[in-house]
Each structure stands twice: as C-alpha cells, then as structure tokens.
Amino acid sequence: MACMTYEEFVASCRVLLQVSKELGDSWVMCHSASDSSTIYLSKTQCFKADMPTPISELTAEKSESPDEIEKLIEDFTQEPEPPDPSSVSNSTPGYIITYEYHIVYSLSHSVPALYFNAWYASGKLLTLQEIWERVSNQFCEQIADNKWNSLTQTEHPVLGRPFFQLHPCRTAELMNIVCCESEQTPKDVKKYLISWLSMFGPVVGLEVPITYYNK
Image (cartoon, rainbow, N blue to C red; front, side):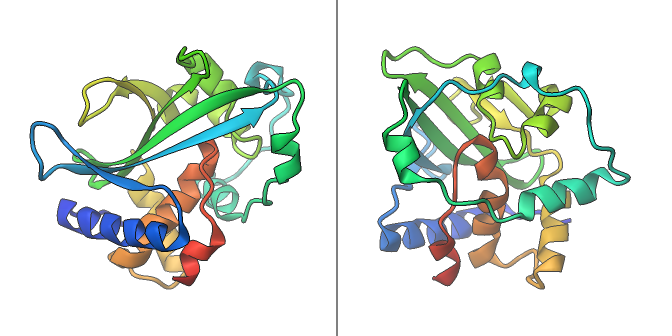
C-alpha cells in the first residue's frame, strides 16, 4: 500500500511548496499553534461561478462497473480539460465563493488528506449539501452514490474546527495503483504529493497545473 510516514509527508510538502513558489502558485506552510512540528499546507482560491446543477437532478440511470477501483482510477487519472477563463470571468449571473484548501497528514491512514472550507462573499459558509452540489461534473455521480463515505464534514485534525474532508480511507489503495501504472515508487517523495493532489483536488475544484510535473 502506498502509505507514507509523517517525515515523508513533511519532505513531500516542502517539495510541493518549493515548486509552488517557482510557479507563482499560492501554497503556504502552516504550523499548529500547540505544536510547531505539526504542519499542513494551505491555499486560498476564489471562484466566480453560476449556480451548479444539484446532484439530486442527475439521471437515475447509472453505468455499471465490474470493478469499482478500476473505474475510480480511470476517472481520476483522466486529464481534465482546462477551464475557459472567459467563462469564469464573464459568467452572469454569478457569485464569488472562496475556497480554503488544506493538505493535512492523516495519522489513522498514513496518507495525505484534503480538508477545505468554502464561503460566500458575505462570509456565510457553504453547507454540506451545497458542497455536494458543487462537486465537479466529472465526479458528481460517484459522490452522489457514496457521499457519506467520500465527502463529509468533520473536525480539522490540527485546527479543531469543522471542515469538509475528502475521506482518505482508500487513498493508499488508489495511490499504490497509480504509482505502479506510472512506474514510480510509492515512496517517491517528490512526485507522491503532486500525483495525489492531481487525483483528488479536481473533485472539489482544485486543479493542479501540468507545469508541476515539469519541475
């Protein structure tokens, strides 16, 4: 299984942080107020978007898959189409939503975990239902089918406040397959976190530029 120790997580965070700095991205390293040795990465991003289509309005017809893991890998590893900047900046009607993403180490699963919060310009936090409805179209059916075990609200392990979380229970399993298919070792500190983020981030709007792989 493609797990990692906390020391490997910290090393991988430093690599991601360095690449982010070189590319002019906005990831920053944060420390726990009670224990400076506990770190996580944070990034804040604003979106202007039209109201999403609720998951409940999706068609009831589902495509059957003989192997759930293979379906997840196929969907997660597809390179997403780049967004059209004009469609984002000129969307009407639209509203501003701010996302704050955190990459945190999961002690119980020994893998990275993605936590995030989102709020409107008024400061009002999005509800869990609104978060489910804003999941990328590429993954919304998967989330709808298993939303309570994949995307939920829980206590942030460092901050102790409610945050949304993409559950890391199958991260090691998926990363092990991805590492094998890409012929990289599960312990490849430089590539692990970037590969993981590019697989899970797009589910909740966090895209990883292809330039991260060229560094």
